[in-house]
Image (cartoon, rainbow, N blue to C red):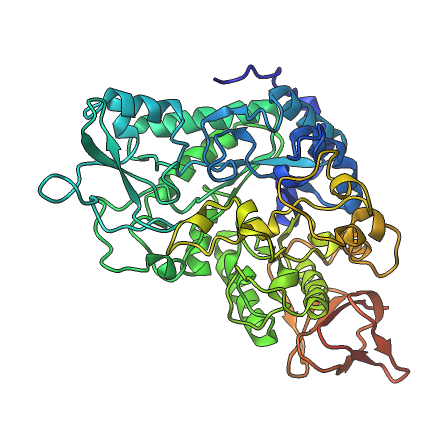
Length: 560
């Protein structure tokens, strides 16, 4: 099934992106969800050639690297997170030559490419799993997954009480080659996503080979999906409770955040460090505390881990300050940079989250107050980009896109939507293809419509509509990233100096730079800390050295 690779990228191909060591410590990394970014062939589905055609836009936006969600060969039971072949590109996205051209073009534009890696589970169409089913009980291939006999008089009950993140039992019973009900296999997500058994040495060998395949292609790093889930507790013990999804992020589970996972990443780090170009690993690790997240970024393991605690924090000055402090305090002992993120392909866009009352979670079904949400989102972005460390942007947030909360049921494709008692299943709302032009088929996404319907009026939020328009969200992002790259006191580091501020206001200094954010519902009077570099809204500076900071507004200052 694997396609033939292009020749490995020569070291010189990385020259334009290897000028600065430790680039990842203060990088701004832009997530591309390929099926929703740009469609080059008019089939309604985004593809690698579409991404490649828009790389100059990302260069001009001012980001340092591009993270691509999965484009591997897949039946698409979970939007590509069910991988059938880790060394092949799914035909809907192109082929390996397209991937090679994208990587090379990105490097020519001084952009780095990070690809998704899905090591917790494969597709049920992966050759290993298909052979495991066909060969029946006792097959050596079954040892590479978690096959178990069921409980009950005739094995009719699941091997334990674990529940799928997508709802229902985490086990599915197979029909054996002779037609009889047989063993069960573990899938923490959809039944089409059987979990690998990372206690089996062949699994580790295979993934180290996959790492080398893509490193030889020239990628600059890997975002590791479900990085906390590879290793399961010995004996797969019962959890002893129901509604287990509600416990995620609050407790160490027998199937998540087990200490043995760190041995996997130490072995991977050895492989990565053999390659030139300062390449990196980024963990998607949902852990109970930021302190446990820090375990994944110790010096001999991964480089970064997503800060989901920050993403989940309410628009509240005290809560935000506490999260920032806890994050910096946790990362400092292991020497890793903090990361900051507000949106991604799995959560409601922050322009919509902040449009709704606090406490509704990260998947929200109501549009809320659109004007309020956008104002807070702009302020939150400037706050995030002022913090020390690395920041992640999700495609379209630079346009101020809201979640599409009113998609008809018949067009939804999130597998969790169709399963009870799991995730809310409303992730399609943040995955609607982004608008590039005011008019035309799918607002410039492609010539043949889009795989999820776009709202009326999407064109007024497009790149075309906002480019060159003073005060637009797109121009705010462009200006913020330009200022961030120019100011020596922004970016890398591990400390902020908090300044006295009115209730509801955050203020901190980093060298000659000061960031002030008003999270309150009323305007606040604050000191003018020099010259205004950038603001998310109108700020009035008086002759007596004070400034009127509107509600839900951030301003960047620089000492004169």
